[in-house]
Length: 255
Image 1 (cartoon, rainbow, N blue to C red):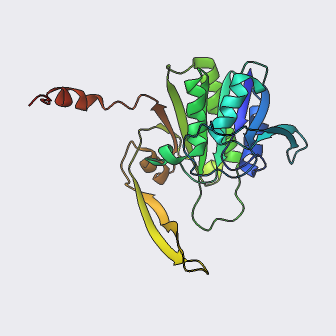
Image 2 (tube, rainbow, N blue to C red):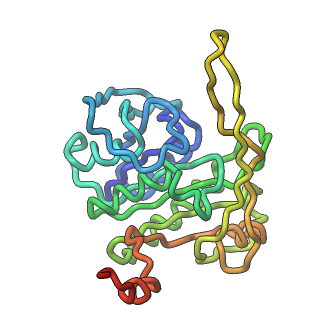
Image 3 (cartoon, helix red, strand yellow):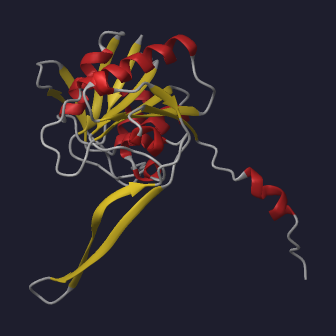
């Protein structure tokens, strides 16, 4: 098996290293990830400039590739030919914060896995539910969860057009309550606009605010994490609101 590992925090991020080390137990691993942090970058396809790929060395001495493109660009570059050998699975992460609810539309971690699915390759996104003000994180438990899910996916397959978003509690592995298959929950954002002026009196803005929370509902990604479970959410690229189709078909367009 050949596994492509990427992320949105940059190729030298510790979460990527932990993930790559665990994936090597399942097969050959190629790392192609951004050369800088692309957190909350969403699903990007760079079309207006050339991209470059360079060789780098990870902290454990193993080789990797870094690109100046976004996470989804890195997956596209690999699958379109920068990586010559056929890729069987793309695993993205490990993100230091959870990607739940509407986060998946912002997340470079998740959209890298989406890019894999668009190209007909199975994709997983792995995130750790760390808390605000965390210190150094232990990515080992989340990496081992990712390896178990990856092994299952390689053995069982996934429906066409589906990726898995895996969110792991930030606690010692012995404290996990188990695994839950979940649906997207409701993320509660507490964004705030910070308006300032530069030394020349021109306005500029930061989008900030308090750390987001969520609605604690059973069966959801947020609810599972709150209860101490690993959350595994199947996501699909078809965003059609099917329940709205018939209602909209009833609209009268002619005067």
